[in-house]
Structure formats: C-alpha cells, structure tokens
Image (cartoon, helix red, strand yellow):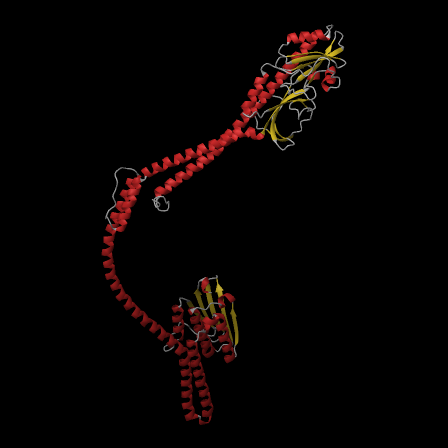
Length: 604
C-alpha cells in the first residue's frame, strides 16, 4: 500500500499526488482571492449602509428642526408667550416635552408627554444655562436637562429658539424635545444591522466640531478623532457630502466615522450642525473576516473532495497502464515470454502493441546475434593469425630499419675514419719505397686519423645511448654541434634559430639533427669552404625549415657516385620522417642543403 502511494515507484501515485497538489493549490489560491473579494464587498456594503443611514438621520434632524422653527415663527407676533405655548402644545402633541421661557430666564410654562421626563418646570430660572443664552440669539440644538437629573440624552436632541413679537423683538425662548416618529426605529434597526450588540454610536456636532448631542462623557467636548485611513471606496459611488473614514480615538480604538450635514434653510444655519455615526473598526471587519474564513474553509473542503474524486478517477483510468507495467515486469523476470496486449485502441493498447513488437524483434535479433557471434569468433581467429603474422613482419621491418640506421651511423663515422686511415696506409707504403725519411711524420698523421675515428665512433655510440635532442630541443643541440664544428675546423660559421623552431624535440628532431651532422661532415671533408651558415626557423607557423649553406667547391648532385651512400642516406632519413629534402649545388658555386617538415602546433 505504501509502495503504491510512493510517486517514485508508481506513476499512478505521481498522478494522484499531482492532482492533490494542483487541487489544493487552486483551492487555496481561489479561496484567498474569493475571500478577499467577498471581504471587500461586505465592508463596502457595511460602509455604504452606514453612510446612507447617517445621511438619512441628518435629513431627519434637519426636517424636525425646520418644522419646529417654522412653527415657532408662525406662532409668534402679538400673541403672549403663554398663548404661543398653548398653540405649540396643541399643534404638536407628539412632542416629548415643550417649555417656554421669558427673556429673564424664568420658565413660564412646561408640558410633557406621559412617557417622558420634563427637565423644566414652571418657575425654574435657566438664565445661566448655555442653551438659554444661545437660544436668545438663534436656533440652538443640544441636550437640556437639570443638573443631576436622571433624564437620558434624547435621540435627536433638544431645540431652543427665540420667540419674536410682531416687530421682530425677542420676547422669550421656547425649548422642545426633537422627536421624529420613525427615527428611533430607524436608528435601532441600523444599530442591530451593523452589530447585534448595538455598537453604532450617534452624535450631533456643531460647526466647531463640538459634540452637542450624545453620551454625557462626550457632550460639550470637541470630537478628537485623528484620521488614520480612508474607508474603502463605495461602488457605485454615492453623491453625498462627507466621505467615511477611519479615525483613532485617544483611547487607542479605531472607529469608522460617517458624517452628514443637518439640512436647514437659510444661509446662517447652513452647515451649523452635522450628524455623525461611528462604529469600531473590528466590528466593521468582523463580519467580512468571518465570511472570508468561511470561504477559505469551503474552498479547501471542495478542493480536497475534488482531489479525492480525481485520484479515484485517475486510479481507475490507469489500471490498464498498471496491468501493462506488471506484464512488462514479468517479461523482464523471465516469467512469461511475451507482453500481454490489452483490448482497445487507446494509448495503453498502442503502447503495449509497440512493446510486444519490440520484444519480438529483440528475440529475433538475439538469435541473429548468436549466429553472428559464432561467425565473428571464427573471423577473429583468422584475423588473430593474420595480426600475428603482420606483427612478426613489423618486428622484422623494425630490425631492418634499425640496421639501416646503424649502417648510416657507421657510414657517417667509422666509414669516413676508415677511409682516411686507408689513405694514410697507402701513403705510408709509397713513402717507405720512395721517401723513407718522411715515414715518421706520416705515421704520426695516421695515428691522429685513427684517434679521430675512434672519437667519432665513441660520439656516435654515446648519441645512440643518450638523446640530447629530446632533452634540450633541436635548437640547443644544433648550437652545440655547430660550436664543435667551428672549434674543429676554424671556419666562419653563422648559426641562427628562432625560439619557436628551437623548442621542437620529438623523434623527428633527432633525425634532423643527424642529417645536419652529416651535412657538416661533408662540408669539412669535401667542400673546402671558408664560410658556413646554418639556419633553423618556422615558416607559416606550421612548417619547420632547416637550411645549411657553404661557399665551397660544390659538386653535381645528379652525377653517379658508386660506393658512396651519403646523399642516399640523407634522402632515406628525410623520407623516414616525411620531410622534403633538397640539395642545390654546382661546381665552384657552393652547396645549399634544405629540409622542410610540416608539424602540428602541439608538437612544439
């Protein structure tokens, strides 16, 4: 079971794990994206609802204030204050309470509904109150209550406005509670919609930003929230005055604030008050975050379910491939001779048919290989005998080449020395008969020739044992040979070798060195030259050139010389290393010995 789940041992497991990984990745990515989109949509809806309700409350408060002010203006004129009070009480029975105050600040009359607490009673003096002083000069909105009274803050606040006579003179102040028959239900619905715990807070602010209607701890104090960030944009946008935004309170709490002006007629009352609804930021995002988390979990569960169903489907679809794998493994172990080809025309059936054909071809080729192996062994035996014969001939050819090399060395050393000694012996025989007195000098001369021949033989043997050319390079070896030639002959010798050609030092360099020695010996013995020049250089960066020149008597290179093998030996050595050999000479015009050899750059 564990082996079947290991993707290293099972292609089906690999496909299943790939599907699980893709499904999980897609589910997580989709859930994060969908959760983010849903979160933004929910927050936008929340903000939109808060803005709409704020604007509606501002409109409600403006309408309530406008209607009371219009009623107060309509009831003014020559009527006494008590008559105005009676008419207002009769015209607006839905008022929670209404009171009228003369210019001295004494409450002349008050009336209240059965379900409210009247904060003002007849005979009270309110001259020192702010609402009275403000109400003498114009409309005032706030909260009216006796010090220490148990009255709670009204929903839309209280109104204080001046009462004027027919001449426009202020004769008193009327105070009334601002109620609106559906506004309390609307605010309660708004608060419960935004948060079941009623977290939405309703305030009324004046033009200076001071809270005039609201909880007692905030009343008559400036709203001191600091801008933190703008609220998410509302789609589609609303044509409203104030844009919602997040503000941080001195307590450290961040709240979403929406404001709407109280719409009143008249330039002096425009933007005098504004309604504010606020709600904690965590409450705003609580529903959105919960929805995002729910979407993530739903997406993950759906992704896992998709992966499971996909894995089962992949396992079912790959059963034929697994059967083919088992059949191939059985053939490999030798349990069966041929792959079982399943029915059908899909890729698995085609693959099995191809494998079966390949296996049949392999069996046929194996039998053919066995036949070819037997034939090959027979041919190998024949070739082995042929190679042995060729190796024997190669060894014989190597011996012949070595004999030729020794013959050339003997010719270059001992043959010259023996010829010189033979000439001296012949001369001694003639002197013994014709000039016995000079016999002693010639004997000394013969001894020198014999000693020279012995030195040359030792030098040749030493060169055969020690290869100075490979050790130092062709250039330094030729330089020493030229120095010895100069010391021995006293001729004017000029030697020139460029550094690149001087480094050449494989087995071909040794042959070139011997050819140069032979050329110098021929100059010493036959050329009668006064000046010799030896040059070694590279031509075209891939061709080595050796040039030996003298200004001696010269000779005819085409003339036949029976018994002399010097030129023949030089040509044979040049052919041995694949070099081009050329001799230019004529009687009384000197001799030029030129050898060129093409070499690879790595041989330097």
